[in-house]
Length: 174
Image (cartoon, rainbow, N blue to C red; front, side, top):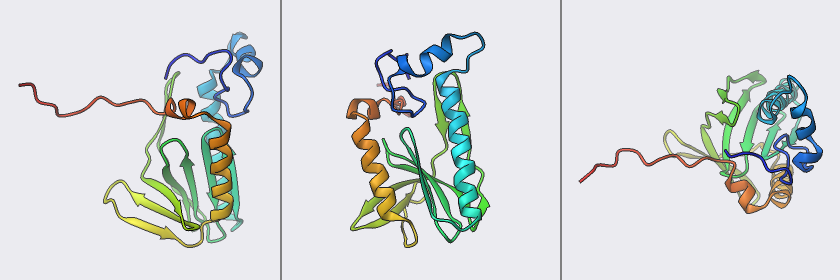
């Protein structure tokens, strides 16, 4: 991920321009990088959604390009909007460990699924076996509304920069 421009949307998820949000804080001595702050915020939001799952409360939270949701059955998921990635963060009210790797420029999450909303239903497709599953108890209306708000807030170009292209593997030279 490249350097953040002063007039771009701040990566902390506030929706404000970077120059009016985290740029000032970063210039202060010992300031935490915007990506570090986003990771701290993301970890805090994961804890919040896990708490809702533990209590059996339906909840939907938004943070930048992420949507987190919990249902009354105690399941909770973290969704990323740009590539429709998903990972479960709680099951039956108990936390599911999620690997979040971070360096000063990026945050990498070990996504296990992709998600889709079709015909007012929430579907997950596993990366491991490509099996599609329908989640009956997902708060689909609220998730769909959150996804629409995020896609409206960020341009296609901004969303495309959320992911880094990975180099092709196993190419033979002739």
